[in-house]
Image 1 (cartoon, rainbow over the protein chains, first blue to last red):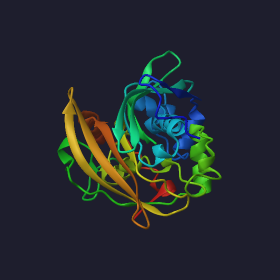
Image 2: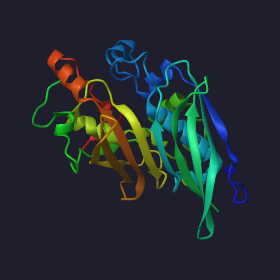
Image 3: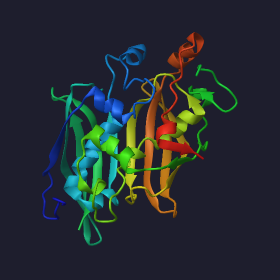
Length: 137
Length: 170
């Protein structure tokens, strides 16, 4: 299943993952529990937000899905992800997880790919930025 | 639940947060139905989570326990609006077989100020019932003292965590 191979060059793009975010998904992700900023217009407005915002963990999952597709097993057994949330995601947004290989470092018989990763919305505005790494054998 | 502090539940304001404090342990009980909901929510169709994987068949999607640091924190601290999730650091150590019991061990590891905002950092280590480490994650949340105090004055309800749906407190 993995795509990554040792001979890939720095700068290589990671195949992206695209998601259309709905309020229904945010509610499902919250397990339809009590109203909160992710599920309720009223609570979101009380909290000073323009709309119910998607959970940051959803974008976390989008990036992890992209990296699982790319690295395969070594992502879920040894992968590292560090992301910052810089803009809200709201229902109706189309979010694309993207990334590229920034650096390759040797670790024993394997190579660690250090990558830049981010999510951006349909306007090209970044919502999440960060780094990720995993080993390639 | 009214927003008020007590001997067990503290208001989430900077002065109340104790770095080093251990938060309640959480029992993680994954199952196909719960996993199915999360998979639909994030639109992930990888068969590793449904039928077969390189390890066991199938494995638990990490979104079922990604929020353990936040959930554990909300059992000890009251915050009325939901956290402003600023940063997340995750180390995927081992996959967790779907249905295998696991626990989240959480503590507050830091609080810091950046550009006039206060942040709390909680860290969870997830281990399965055999003690195998599954995942380590750090959750950075921005907290707003003035808004919490204002909410307290006006009696805005605290939103309890979804603990009864997904986790069991030890």
